[in-house]
Image (cartoon, rainbow, N blue to C red; front, side, top):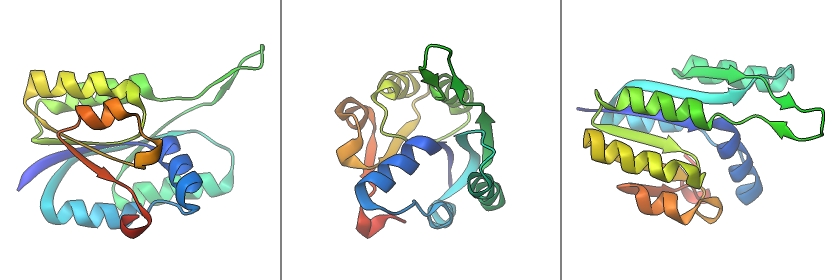
Length: 157
């Protein structure tokens, strides 16, 4: 079987599936489907650390499924702005992992990752996949992926 690395922008997938379909994404079903087709070599889920018990239980469930859950704090600045994204961390991990993988799956709709997918294809000849809510995904990210699959109510996995 071909190998795959899975990289999940948890906040992006949570909010887009909630806003588009009022339902959470089923990570266990995704894991089962990927396991039938690929050898999962890397599976990272990037989230914001929380004191919310429900979010902590969700992150524990992801770990139980097989994801390495990486968290960092949500930063509230004195000027009222906030920061809590994992774009740089996801980018570094994907670049460091791609050399040993046949496939990379990114779960995010963030167009900032389009350049990353282009670089991975060019440098590692790795097949790139994106799974996201199409109506809330940047067109340039969809265009950069070798394979794009939309999350929809029918395949909310």
